[in-house]
Length: 119
Image (cartoon, rainbow, N blue to C red; front, side, top):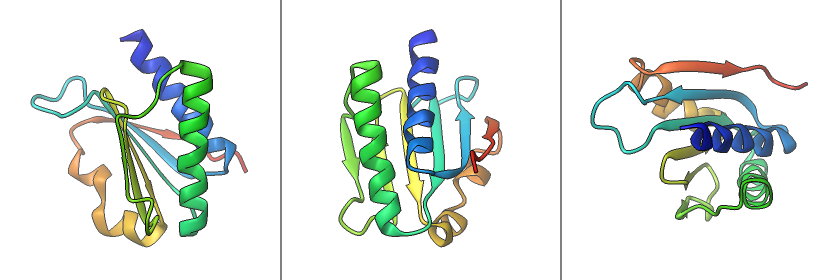
């Protein structure tokens, strides 16, 4: 489990590197029948920033944790990019799509940790 938490920390750092904001880490380890152990949810102001955050997470995790995502979806329009690190799913949204899909509410029974914005 410590490797997974370390992966989450590296993902958060990669998001912060490109000024991703309103980061929420959803701990799903106590929830039955989930596809992963953690969700990391954040947003960028524009599709360009969303794509930059996804690139930063990919690079940061590869360099500092030595792993690559199994899959990345959504880069074409970059309104919602999902990155699959097996035990951790990263969701990077533009604000209106994040509000619309409201993943935090879907996983309200998970332990949610809000990461303070750096700016």
